[in-house]
Length: 474
Ligand code: GLU
Image (cartoon, rainbow, N blue to C red):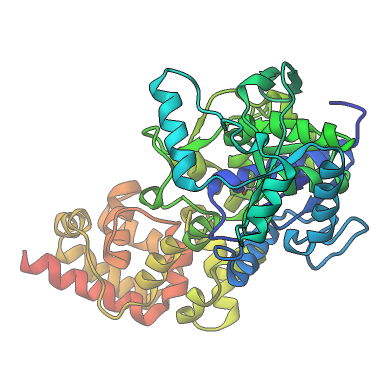
């Protein structure tokens, strides 16, 4: 793909949340543009008025921005090849319909859905692939006019040429070959006057100067139809890259069950955009390195030709790996912003900063930080069973001394723990495990010294006293 600066696009329908598969399509499309020094266009396919919603559109745009996919042309940005909402491109579509009509490549079709279904079933029963039977192709103009005059509203079909081979080279799937004889005359304008996906989508891609269409391979069978239309219109054809689907681990469609059906699900759980970018860029695509890649490096390691031909499966362990990397690569300030109001219970800003610095290695998702904030601020500590066992094993006497020395050394961690070691003869895990258990209620977690500083001397002393009681009751 070297040498060509591609203009790519993402063309979402604003009917709901952005599915993870669509987010990957958007990312790949954006990466092609960035990797080749080209342009990335956003076009909103909102011609289905009933299913398109302004709120869904706003949410999709916000999610794309959050993921870091900025567009060079599109809604809120403008550009020379707008409008960027398909519903505003009706005059362009009407002109294309006119051109095809003038070239006698269209005809009105009055077949009802029932008639079409009947014909489809008959063909299937006869063992033939179902195609439109060209019933209305034979209507003469007078008869068609009589029906229109009688109030019937026809769809418009495109006359597919006979005996043609349609070929293109897909950037993912390689050479593709279709026979026009397998394709029935298809609808390009519905009876309600709206243009079909085939026409609107193909005309817009070409008119907007898109050079490479990146989209899901559920559209692969649409491409030969769209190429025939563009050829009939004398419009330039783009190249295509059809991406395999993203499935759930069990091979079924990705659903709410995985908590990852949409980009907003992952956002809401606290996944960071860099984690999702690194994860999606490796979902059915070989980056050639296992290293963390920032936006700029990602585009250097991206080549659409290295996309796998088969469906990709969502793998939460992989996503968590990249989330770990994203947290590791984020600055303390970024993490503080990420955790936001969850840190309020800790108190003043310096405390929040100290918390982030202390726990960043132990936080994968914001809920992990919630748990640590709770440990540090709880009046009544929840003690887990293995921590309770540690406390019992160390004994009441250990905590009595630990407490006295804590007061003596005013909670200064190093001197305090050294003194406890000397006084009790314990060291290493035998010293720190019971202390950690008493102070945090668990046997694992971030480095202990900053946690003690964050919970405050008063709370720490109380917890040591509680542990003494707990150990003596045993
Ligand atoms: N609006 C279409 C969709 O969401 C776009 C398909 C395409 O990218 O060509 O599936």
